Length: 562
Image (cartoon, rainbow, N blue to C red):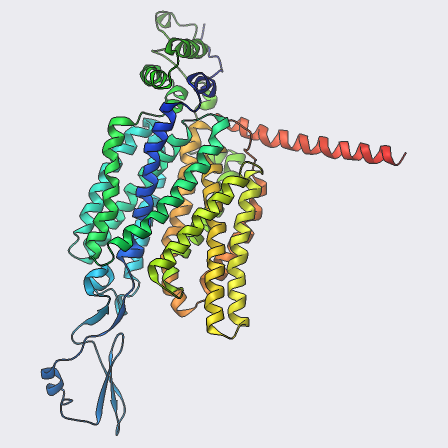
């Protein structure tokens, strides 16, 4: 007789419930993994501090050069040192221009920014932003490959290996002797950093049950926001040092990987879902000890549930135990092709890509253009980052009262509206002082909205993909995010020439993208799904509830009119 398979699967949430949902083990693992977000924030945003756009003009000509050019004793000539050329003003003939024969003069000093050290100005303007684009290209490469690897080989192994490479690339970048080396290492750092954050976030979410996942994801958003804010005093502390010292200060946060090697365990949810019972037993024993619960009771539950997954009808399976052989049912064997062949998965992925792009583009644009706001450079960054904390506090409150989609759409529309209003006021108002004030206020409101929205999409996305597609789904969000990261650095150049364009594009884009969210299933109140069929049932159940509610109101109306 052919072997048959039962289609039950271990209820991982029940295992975590028996383990104690908010036990010391989960909280400690979460706390260590949460530090990765500070590392990621420093890697992503350090260009704001190590790549400051300096004030630049041509360096002064020497007395010898003036003499050779016959300017030394000729009072009819006046030299004006501009950004990219020297203007020769005459009283009796047509003005002339000279190239910057002695290079450039910078404020602040040359060593404070890699832009000035590598002379990325004038005909090389935009090269500094290109390094951030290369960083994002690296993230895109990582998003296309790493999630598949972590779903297949496990979260921790890939996370640790690539974290070490990430640390090495960041240290190497701090000693880059020239621009090509700097750019290449920035690309490598982008590949590694994205590879670090995706499995880390997935492991954090997979530590807890349905009752806690909203709280944990919202807490993660707050930790990210506080991490971004903490970069301001760190950057200001080193603001008199060279960009190389600043870069080392930021990358040094990555040494947390050596704590993770020793302390962090593989995702139990991934191990149990993929039938790796021996590894699960070892981790469950540690977790039970740290949480103060009985291991034997928890393990007996796992063995009993996993027995239903053993292949039957083969004599050579008789002597094997659930600890040795667990074969997940066919419906759990999904892959990347499911995102294309399955209609529900395809719709989810397209909408997540669009909204992820708009969130990332807008979020990074606020930081990249903070220097263009009037006032102190570091204060502008601090206020922008502080609004991220405020936005996440509002999100933390609303996410427990309202639907994911509704809350996210509200914050996206808030951000988009603030950006559009900023553009409108630019054309209406006359006083430059008032315009500057309005820009700052609208920028801060916009940051509040987009930071909350961006946090929610990272909570929402892993909730609507099944287990063996979850990392791929988060990777798709990472892809859209990296595309936004690739485009956003150039906003700080565009805003110098067309001030209204970046705000107009991102403002309108966020408002339009927010309406697509209502085509997706709502995940609030559901367990993390194991199959796409579960996700489809959410939509069916929601439609049934709406229909029942509509009929109830219709019956009530009929009764009142009898």
